[in-house]
Image (tube, rainbow, N blue to C red; front, side):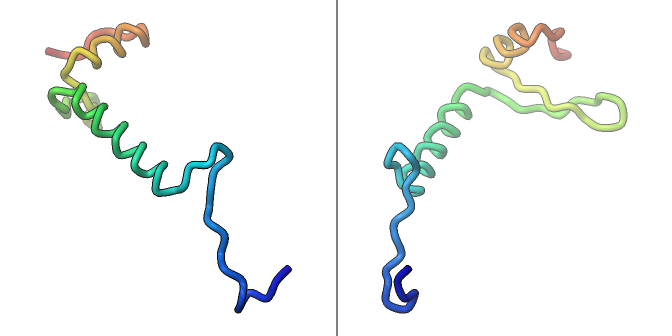
Length: 73
C-alpha cells in the first residue's frame, strides 16, 4: 500500500463503469418517471393507521397484478 498522504483517492465505479453521480442521475430520472405515472396520493382510514392509496392507471394495474381488491373510491 502507498502512503495515504501522497496517494490520490481512486474514483468509485460500480462493476459496469458507472460513477455514483451517474447512478444518482439515473435514480432521479426514474423517480421523475414514476411520479408522472401517479395522479394523486391519498391517505385513507384503515384501522389505527391510514393507508396510502395511489390514484392513477398504474396504481390500478399494480393492484390487479398483486391480486388485491380495489382501493376505496
